[in-house]
Length: 438
Image (cartoon, rainbow, N blue to C red):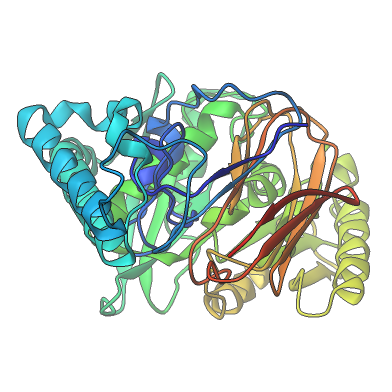
């Protein structure tokens, strides 16, 4: 097994530069991320890597003054760490001035492997964020003006309502998915029109998208993740939305989608609420660090919705008991109610509002859905495989991983997560796979 440390701090992949839930990372042969205040979505990311590494490798990516890399560009042997960092910063600036479109190719530049000081790393994050924002802002503002979002070859329309005053960090964002499904477009349109009036948060941007298709799985298809990801990032990019106060909700077919989307996009969310749906093959494993509400009519027996809601409630009870402080949930199988619950489920709106996302939780749990994702919180994989699972925990200076995911596993760290001045140990499936001397 080949283990490499990738702690250099200057490279870029745009999908990670703004990734809402991702810690800051700059790695010469991989991706880059800014601070929590500068988030972005997956839809621009190039997931290729030039690293000559074998399957089952673990790569630890980090940041911080004094960090080292496995490979370094040619430098004057008497140059100080600050000189190296300053030279890399200068080279970056020259490249961007010469060719602003080079953002996605920075990882190919020789200076991209240079270790940066903490001060210069902060400058780089700001510089790359500003450059990306300058490049993307007009297109994102145009989509917002037209109430559409475009990604994965699809266009999704939406409607909005605004509630309350805008907080200093931005509004909360409630994305509310309509019901319907395998029916006429006019019926799904009616459901969409109903959804925008269904709930009223005390504060926030309440947004109801119209599914791009009229199929039974209209909120479960792979393009939905990309569309919602871009939607979130656009409102963050424009400064309208707080990236740590994003909430998903859905009714009926929208609830079907929530069972799927909540766990697989949990790293983007503070909380989610499912109403009157059924889970299909979804797994609750990914819900560890968000709030998740389930509401279903006690008499809503179609597709065993009521029974499955109760089963998920019991599963979440057991998961929460097993790990105190995790898997927070609200479950209400409403006695005497059918598919329509007379808005009893609206109680989930203020309940969700009590959650704020933690973008860098010390422990994560990830189930790879049939709609694959390459990253989840601070871990990424090169070859996602449906049905595989991972748990990863940072405790003191040790990172413990239990997983059955194939290929290269990348751990993305920042100075708020671990102390780079001290030794770092990585255990994967009981084996010590990496040690970094601080």
